[in-house]
Length: 151
Image 1 (cartoon, helix red, strand yellow):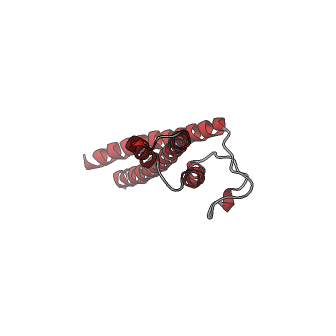
Image 2 (spheres, rainbow, N blue to C red):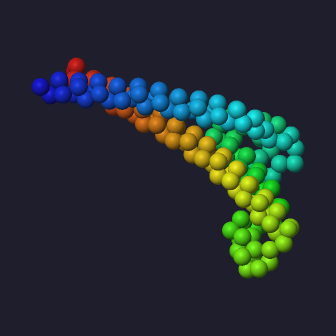
């Protein structure tokens, strides 16, 4: 009876593992395909510190998307003097609105929105890694239960 229970648990874990690994790989391909469609490339030079390894590369992975979001963040900070969209909006609401400040708010908004989208791709990439890892763990546990069932 216990051997049958171990075998059933092992089979269920292996089935779950196959599904998880497959879905993780499908998710990775989906993130890669979407990033490739965006045709985002790092410039060949003048990158902020720590991003030199990405020079000239096309963004195709979640890790590269995160790095590119860092690049955008540096550009936005440079353009806004380190102020965020919320801070610039607060200045405008305080009565300091002028054409330059309005354009600066638009720049901050677009930059922060792009950063958020790229960080979402990075998070999706990390979730796929987690799902693949959990699938591998389920596979190992399933094999262990099957081993116990037939020993």
